[in-house]
Structure formats: C-alpha cells, structure tokens
Image (cartoon, rainbow over all chains, first blue to last red; front, side, top):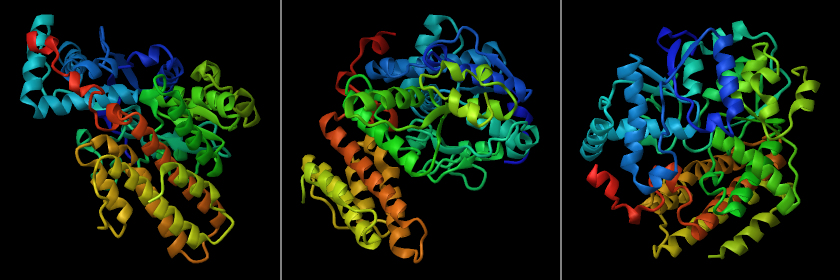
Length: 311
Length: 146
C-alpha cells in the first residue's frame, strides 16, 4: 500500500476491555501512534463489551447483539462509517456480528428485539466497516507515508511477527482478505511485517505467525498453553528474532505470562522481547519508550531498547 | 501408527545436522501420524488421498469435517508441507540445519495442538471456528425471551 486513504484518517475507536486492563500499553501506544501520524481517533461513546469469550460461550447471539450495539452507536449516534478495533478478539467479534447480521435471519431478529428493548437503533449490516489497527495504519498512511515519517529507524531490530488466530480465522468473516495484491492474506498475513519493514525493522521468516497459542485456555489448561507458547518462543528465537511483535492484547499477555511460566514450570528461559507493533512503530516515529508504554509490559525490554538506542 | 507419546519422542530424536532430506520425510510422516491419531480418536479411517500433493493436507481437511476448530492447525500443516518442499526440492539451500530444526518445531506444534485438543476438545473452538465452547448448552432463555 503506497497511497494514503482519507477515509481512514478519522475513525471510531473501539478499545474494548483488554485495552483498559492488561493491554493498556497497546491502548497507550495506539493513541500515541495515531497522534504522531496525525490520525483522528474518536472513541465510541458509552461502548460495551464485544461479548468476548464469556458471553459468546453462553449465547453467541447475545455476543452478536453486543458487538452490533457498538457498531450501531458508531453509525447512528456518531455518524462514523469506520470502526477501528486494535484487539483481535474485539475485531473478530465485530466482524462475526457483521457477518451474522448480513447472513443470519435469526441473529437479525434477536438483535432487533434487544436493540428496541435497550432503546437504540438496530444495527444494519453494512453501516460501518470494521477494521484492525493494522488496516488503519496501512490504509491511512501506507508504507511510503510511514517511511517518510520515520525519525528513528528500527534498523537492527530483528522481528518475528505473531498475528495469532482471531485476526484471520475463520476465513468467512473476513471477506476483504485474500483478494489478491494489496489485500491481507488469511494463510500468511503480512500487514504487520509490511509496516514494521517500512519503519526499518528486519522481519525474520517465522512459520508459526498464526499458530495456536492455546490462548482461550490459558487459565483452564495452563500447561497446554505454556507448551504451545514455549514452542512459539523457541521458533522465533531459532528464526533469529530479538523481538516478537504482537497486535492483540490476548496474544501479547499470553506470550509474556507463559514465557515466565515456562521458566518456572519447565526450566526453560527463552530470552526474547515481546512488544506491541504500535510500540515499535511509535519509537520509530520518535516517541520515547515510556510514551508508548514499554514500562507497562510484563516483560522487561528497557535494557534491550536502550542498547538499540530507543530508550 | 505410533502413539502421540512415541511420535513426540521420534520428533525429538531427529538430528537437525543429519540428512536433511531424510529428516524432512520423517517429519512429514510424523505430521501425518499426528493427524491419524486425531482421526482414529474420532472413529475415522485416515484417508490415503492427497491434496495439493500432500497426504498431510488431505488428512487435515478430513479432520476438520464437522469440527471447524481444527482449522486452528491448518497453517501449521501448510508450513510443514512448505518446509518439506524447501528441504527436499531446493538444492544447495543455505542454513539447512536451522531449517530442519524449524521443521521439527512446526511438527512439534502440530503435535502439541492435536495432543492438547484430544485432552481439551474445545481448544480452537472459541477463536478459530468462532463457535461457543459449550454449544450443547445453547438453549439459552435470554435470546428466546428477549
């Protein structure tokens, strides 16, 4: 992507609950990057949970309603036509709700009933476009635009880009992907690679970029999750990476926590830094490490970043 | 067909510094056996058909029937096939030892995922199939009475 698309320069921002808790560094760095790039994030008014895992487990139609309410508020109360969700879980659930509202009559009926009961307009399929933070920067600024704005190149930083699962699966809820050159790929996503390369980073070949980390079972079946994460960390290290870049708060905290747990439980320490892609981009744009919340991560990357001239 | 425990030992035993072509063949076979374990556990006979030239990919497709969450390992299978191609078809490939080591990790990931899923059937349900974990409990009064 080399052109800047004005449609994405002002978007409705849906941080979701994780970005107010464990993923606060992602929230901080996303906002900081938006400001540095001159992009306008307008937070969705009175937003609610997207349905995440908990509601979806009990009744997926309630999840569809909750996600559709977020989109309805953006469209009908804020007059926005793009909703940007940096969290893979939120992004996935909004995309799923969009798909259900376009294809499942029962979902439309349930959402309509609940919306009337709650006193807001029913979301209609197609009113907004839901995008991820990766789409946002890729579309609004593009690689060329990013290169022009880089003040502190990420040269010398070797990155394994980890996308996790909910950014690309299941394929049918992402109809805009796999559309040929310029579009994102569900089998081999590359938007994060593209953006970080534009900022000067060296991306390593990383075959487990969408592999399962056991994230949904991180508490109920911790050993499986730890083993899956440990293998991802080992693979990234073998690929030559110093840093794993993430674009999802669940992936990020899962990698960080299981990195520690792997050492305690299995005695294996993998020395690799885990940073949000927005933190890396922010530092490339000249922002200080504190400004992009590196101190809020669980893993300590400060010494490494100092060595590289970023902190 | 070997058990998952035997497969794990066989993956660990492969020497990345040894014959790369033989290692690639062994790891591909081990990947097929991992999927074979999954299919057997579901009372299915593993297919001998191939998909895009790989039995591994045909077995994966067979494994997803009725369980879309098994797509959580789709790309892992495709990467295993890709590394097999790299190691067996590209003469004079650099960093061969590292690539065999990486193929071992990909195979291990498939083993860990399938092994984990055989213990916790819902692994991948929430995310990769976008399906609730407790679909059996779906007759929820909230949406009915809404």
